[in-house]
Structures are given as C-alpha cells and as structure tokens.
Image (cartoon, rainbow, N blue to C red; front, side, top):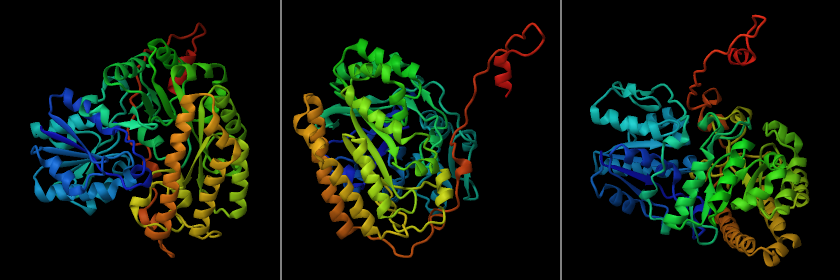
Length: 521
C-alpha cells in the first residue's frame, strides 16, 4: 500500500517559538517496519512553517496514498488539529485514515462516536500493529483478527480488538531514519539533532503520569546496539545531539552503565539530553563521571513539586532531600539540571506558592520548567481530581503550559502571574546569571544562553497569550463532566507476555526451589 505519515502542526507556544525542530520519532518508528514490509512510505512533517492545513493536505494527497496515518507526540492538545486534517482528507480522497497516539489509545470510543473521519485507531505501540493492520487491509482479512486496534463494526458501533502485546525486543523494530532530511532538524541552538528512545515505560507508580500505563512495562534496548546506532547517525548524517524521549532511561543501573561505556567506546562527539528521576542520579553518584564522558549534558529532573505532602499525594516516590542532592551532584560533574515544577496538584494559595519558590531557590537548579497540572482520564490522579472544575475548554491548550483546573483560593490571573514571577526570579537570580555569563565550559555556556533566549521569547509570548488570546470559563464543568468517567482501570494499554521458563529443580528436601516459588506467586 502507498502510505503517508502526517505529523500535524502543533499549536503549543513552545512548539511555535523556537527556531529548532525535532523529528517525529513516533511516526519514524512506525515508518521503519512499514518500509521493511515492502510498502512505499512518505512523511509530511507540518511542524515546519507551520504548514497551513490546506497545503498539508495537498502535499499528503499528491501521491494518491491508499492509507494516511496521523499521529503526534503531544496527542491530547494536538487532537483537534489531527481531527481537522482527517476531515479534510476524507472530503477529498478515498484513502483509509488511521489515527495513533496516547490520546486516541484511551479515547477511542469518544473519537469513533464523534466522527467518521478516522477509519481505524491504533492502540498502544504502533510498530507491529500498523504492519498487521495494513496486511489485513491488503489481504481483506477480518479486522477483528488484528490485535490493538479500534474501529466501527458493521453496525457502526465503536469496537476494539484485544490489546496488542508490548514489544519485548525493542531492537527488532528499526526507526525509519531515511524518511527525513537530517539537515532540517536541530535542537540546542542549531545543533543537528534527533529524538531517540533507549527505553520505554517506567517502573514507578506516579499517579498523574499519562505515559507509564501507555507503555505498560519498562523495557530497554540493547545498550551496545543503541550506542552503535547513535554513532552511525553521527558519522552518516552528522547528528550532534540526541534528545532522549524516555520517561526513565536510567531505571536499570546495570543497563544504563553498559550504554554509557558503549558510548565512550564509540568515541563520537554527540551530546545527550533527556529526563530522569533525581533518586537515580543520587543512586549513580559513583558513575556520574561516566555520564559526562559519554556525552550527557543536561537532565530534566521530574521533581513535580517541592512539598512532601503533595509528593505523597501523587505517589512520586521521591523526596525533597534527594532532589536537592541530585542537582548538587549533577553540577559537580558538569551536567546541567532542569527542574520541573507543577502548579495545581492541590488547591494552592499564595503562601503555598511562596514556600515552593523558596524551596526552588534552595534547590538551585540551572533551569526550571514551570507547568500546570493536566489530568489524563486514564490515570489514577484523574479519579482524585474528577470533581474539580475545568476553566479551559479548548483542548488545544491542554499542553501543560496552561491552567486547565480551577483553584478556589486563587483566580487564574493570580496563579498565572505568580508562576511567571517564580520563573523570572529563579532564572534571573545572581547565581543563575553568573553561570550563563561565565560558566567555564563553553558548551554549557552555549546551551544555557540558548535556553535563556528561547525561554525569554516563550515567557513574553505566554503573557501576551494570557492577556489577549486565551479564553477561560468561570463556571465550567467538572473534570469528569468534561472528559467522561475515570478510565484508570484501563491504564495499561497493552498486555505483557512473560517468557516461558523451564521449571526449576526441586531442592533435596522435596520442597520447591525459590525461583519456582517466585514465578508461582
């Protein structure tokens, strides 16, 4: 089949302001197996420009595709745009339209009931499922035989097949790097860059995270093969920076250390940025020198909050002590720290924000990213927050950078300007400015100055947007009324097939060996 992959233009301010753009890893990951299955595949990346929707559709339909697959990493806030693109395609061509991503994986019932623009929804990982779906379409096999999809049945009812199995061997499905022109993609102030995943999922149980259940369980690639692919991207395509899309790449110290050592052995000047947990950094104090030697230059630390009670509420599993120690250790080893801080987990007041600000100053991160709590229907936190009032009904603004839930003690303008002042104060304090101006490492100076320039542009754009463009509702619906009933019972999008092991030998006294007892439990 002739296949086109579409990366919709995102409406988030953070996507529009920077001059750099990163390639859509999710679509490339699906494109590789489709190419290997013998299908012509083409990518239309509408983030450049951004491309107007009529021009996007003209481009997508120019080769008379049989199948159009739409997906975006920011799938909740990108859904209205994805829907509009699908409607425009359906109005002009008979192509089959497939929709994938985190949001449609869980909202498949609502999406299929609301529109006929999408023919199929891929639920969970798409590499294997997309190939199986295309094969079923070509061979006219029953759609019910394809695991991990949703569609309308003969009676026009939304129907989902059983969940697909999580991919056990992540190295078995290659990324379709040939679908992009690497010269067009950059990050970190003009460095040629790509997005990659060493691992998928997270073993921790934070109850607000919309990714953990989607990936279902934590898995990682072969550390040596992953390092070799990075080296190949540098030598063949000039890639200078890897942005890891993992939720928690450092979960296994053994696997992560093997990757660091493999990267050092490859001896390529590639920088690595990504996200991890503060307690993993503290755990790895004895190997942090390998982090920097392997190219790691910045970690985003998902601290989420500086209040112990709030961390307990969201089941973060970390502590303020480990957060501070992680930042200190990273700085000691020449690695930048970016701390995320999320407002709105609880019904905060100005005193709570002031306490959070003082703690952020005490943490002394190199950079911060202030966000707003954005509950997803399939997470346990949604059930906790289901009766809170929604103030933002424009789904395009459910991007973590806009307040979507009301607080009883603070009006939206009060919270917004308090958050903006916290950002300004933390980034402009003398210590932070001194690092930006006089850091001894030129690579670190470059990165901090680039981030400061981008942050300044985003900061003013967000203020302008809040005052002029964004519209909020005063007496909105509850969270459950807006999105529907909680779906945390369906949080895990895929099934996990456990490897079959031979029974362990019985011990001399006739009991059962310890390994066998563990498997039986």
